Length: 297
Image 1 (cartoon, rainbow, N blue to C red):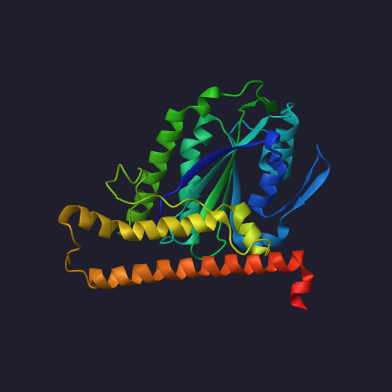
Image 2: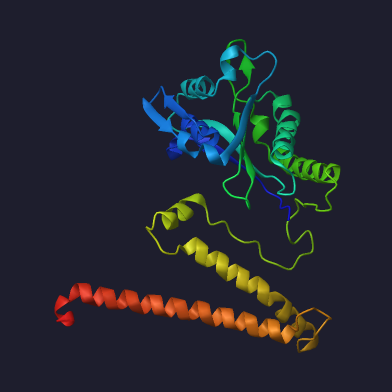
């Protein structure tokens, strides 16, 4: 099922980030950061990167067409310790489209919404798995003036109104592409409340938490626990609303009876609670064992 996502954020030096490192990761390449002398090598993850392209204005100098040169020049152009280096858009692309259609959809949107305003944008299509195809777009914070970046940053690029327009335009672009492909699925950029959907949005686990789990540093993370909690709450919403309206749960012709669904939900809650209690007890036993090794003798 097609999902909607447009996330916009700014890569800042003050947070310890680098435009060169960001570009190397998103393009799956190896790039040397000339400012810090560090080498950022993500060439081993090329299977997840389907295609990348740099979109630039017609008057842009030749050096802007090369990933390493472009983002190293961005680093050189920013002198402050807390500089805003580049802007990133993360877009979910419909799984119902093939790789070529997904990439063309993102490129056309970036040309219309970003390149037209004077930004240079590098578009990269990622397929880390079959369930989550998405696009990263790194954009410059300055326009090109002659052979260099402009002395001042266009502040209007940070307007909230512009971001709201971009969210809506990406939604329209996705739906147009799905219609053109003969697909019935559609996406909606509005909030769940605005759509009249009685459900909490699921929090994001985030790449840091996912990395901790994959490396075995943590068996479970607080973010993952929160996601499961919200999912269980959302499953319980129909029961709660039915009781609020009628004082009891009614059957509305669903293929599975409400009662059966209620039993399934309670079973899952009990299973989750049992796991938490068991894990807590094991941690307590290990803690006591570490403090008093003689207990085991």
